[in-house]
Every structure is written in structure tokens, then in C-alpha cells.
Image (cartoon, rainbow, N blue to C red; front, top):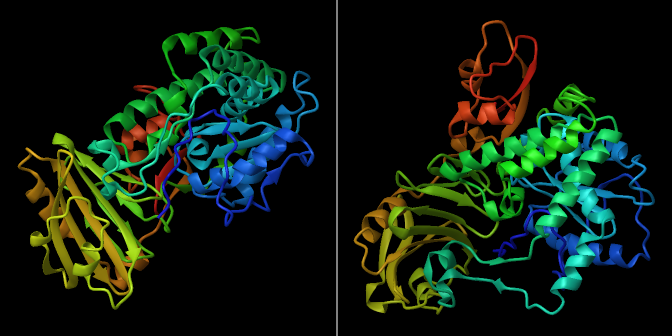
Amino acid sequence: MLVGLALSGCQVLQSATGDATLRPSGSPVTVDTLTRNDRLASIAREQHPRILATYGGEYSNPTVERMVARVVGNLTLDPDNPNQTYQITILNSPNINAFALPGGYLYVTRGLLALANDSAELAAVLAHEMAHVTANHGIQRQQREAEEQLASQVVSDVLGGTAPGRLALIRGQLRLAQFSRNQELEADAVGIRAIGRAGYDPHAAVRFLQSMAAYGELRSVNANTDQRLDFLATHPNPPQRIELARGHARQFGPPGTGTRDRDSFLSGIDGMLYGDTPDEGFVRGRVFLHPVLGISLTVPEGFVIDNTAAAVTASGAGDIAVRFDGVTLNDGVTLADYVRSGWVAGLDPASIRSTVINGNEAVRARARAEGWQFDVTVIRVGGQVYRLLTAAPVDSNRLEPVANAVTASFRALSEQERQGLRPLRVRVVTVQAGDNVATLAARMSGVEQPQQLFRIINGLGPGETPSAGTRVKIVTDR
């Protein structure tokens, strides 16, 4: 299993040795070709495989790619941005993020594309990132950090006992410093000037900042993705920043100035994948389902599932946490021997017991380490072994009921169930006479709080209703 690297939004990665088995994509959309001998481009090429590994690889969709490339192409005509070319990669991640590397490598996630409402909003985000490149903010930050030690904590296995507490159970991460506040505000100003000069609506930056704020509030209640990988994590969004952006935009004119290019943007993302991929499994409320592996489990009421490349985790009240992942185990190794093999810190050998969970061979045990108590369950399904860990503080009386409920929910999916699972997609529909937010949101599936999400992804304020004949986004697996 991979350990996820948490990349701050709007950042430049420092040089490090990547996995030799990962290679930069051979087919990203490019506006122009980077100079191969450029030192900064060389740094970016070194980091490119790590970014792909962190953000789920490249999202290949020619319609989306052409739309994004067209927006970037328009921005490169800005006279303030001469002699800079860009290589664009759309990342296959539901997280909302965009960032740039030295040398002109530009990244945007499909999650950000799903939140944006028109080409002007996308242009505002990308122009902000391009401004960091043209202003050499990454180089300035690397110089500033040269004498500082990178604060990092990587947890390769939560059962290793190397990092206590709930955060160690949930995930490990590398923390990279952000751009300074002044650099962010400078990039805002340069970016808004760039989209205005390119003919886009300069007020798009304000609209997208507001959408991010609304989405952040929704996510604080219903979070099922790793927020450390989001633009929101490192782009403070105070009202003052929105007002500053509005002031920059007014230099070009009132709202309505410039083009929004909404129709071509919506046509570009129609049918785009939304949320998790089939290879990662799907989160549907409190249920995790994996169509490829053919398994499912359910967490108790009040728990929030976080589906990452490393594992499926869930957290609930009282510092109770659950982690689920899979390993390959030789058929000749018994589950009891595997539990005893040393990967469980603080294991109580006397607690190991064999059982059957919904027809599948399993072993359960208890462990205790550094103020935490653990229920450890391993389940064999075919040639795969799944590990289910529930953790609670040593003084909690909720470990057993939570562990029993989650463990009992684990089951293999039938072939019919597997075939019936489909990923969520963005669908663009035309508003009909009599439609309102409630009727349109009712067409969404697989998401929490559909009416609130519908308003956010369509940029609708409280009480605002889309007009008949306009096009809007919904999220559905149909």
C-alpha cells in the first residue's frame, strides 16, 4: 500500500528521489514543449512522478483536456507573461487543487474542474498559479527554507507503534511550507490582471473564492476525501481576501465585464468522473464498496469515511477510529501466524481467536500500545487478506461495540452487486420549466446533502433558482 504524500495546494515540491518504477506521463496536454536543458524544468520532471502517485495519476479525457488547454492557451497571450510555456496535467483526484512547479509544469485536479462554473473561474485559478511561476515565488521559498529542516512525519503502518494518537492511526504525511501571505496576494493581483487582459470576466476570481468557502463549510460536516490535498488547506479564504480580489476586478469594470464562457466549459466537463475511481472503491454515505475487489463494509452512524490511496479510514466521536486495507498473503501462512508475525505492536497473543465473518475465514485479536487499545481483525477472501483495525483510547468502553459492528458488516459482494456499481459523474442538464433546486438535486445520487452540493457546484446563492433553459451540473451514477 502506498503512503500518501500530502501536498499543500499552490506549492513547489523540493527535490527528492522518487520511486524508480514511476515515470512522468508520456501524454499530458501541452501548450508548448519545455526546454529540456532548463534547470527548473529538470527539478519539475523529477517531482512529476511523485505528484502523479499522490493524486491518483493522470486523468485521461480528451474533451476535458482540450477545454483546459484552450483556457491556458488564452492566458499565455498575456503580455505580462512572456517567454513562459506550460505543460498541463489533469490529475485524477476528487480533491480541489491546482499548483505549479518551476519550469512551467501546471497541474489541476478534476475535483477543481467539477467545482468551477465557467472558463473564467478556471482561468482565475490557473492564472494565480502561473503568477507564482512568473514571479519566481518557488525559488524565493526554496532559498528561504534552505536553512530550515522540513517538518515531516511519515507513518508507514499505524500498527508499527512509531507514532501515537489518532492522527498516527488515520494517516501519515509530509508537510511542505506554504507560500507567504504576500506572495498569495501578489499572485491574486497578477492572476486577475491576466484574466482581465485575456478577455475573461475578472470577477470570476471572487466567485470561485466564494464557492471554495461554501464547499469548505459543507466539507467540514461531510468530509470523505483527504482535505490536506486540497487548495483550501493552504489558501486562507478570509473575507478580506475576497474584497481585495473584488477591488482588483473592478479596475476592469463592474460584474459582467468580460466573458464567462460557461457553455463551452460545461460541455468540456460533461461526463467527467466525480469522486473516487472504481480502482479505489466508492464511498456511499457510511458504506464503502469496492467493485474491483468485490467487498463492502459499513461504519456506524456518525462516522465519516476517508478513502485514500493508502487505506480506507473512518473517524467518529470519542476519538474512535477505523482503518481498513488489504495485503497479499501466501496461502500456506495461517491468519493466526500472520497476526503473530510482528506487524501488530502491543499484541496480546492470548487474545488471538479464529472465527468466521459472513462465510469468510477470519482471526481477531486485541492489542494495546501508548494509551490506545486496538481490535485487530484479518479476513481471508480468495487470495486476498483484509486487515480491519479499530482503535480507541484505553479508557474508552466503545471499542468492542464499534469493532463488532464494523467487522460484522464486512462481506463479499455478489456479481450482480459488483456489476451494478458505477462511478459518479458530472452530468450537464438543461433546466426545464417548473424545475427548481429541489427537483434538480433529486436527480443526484451517491452524495451527501444533495441540495447544498447542487447550489455550490452551480454557484447558486441562498434562495437563488436556475432559470429555465439554462444548463446546470448534477452528480449521478446514472
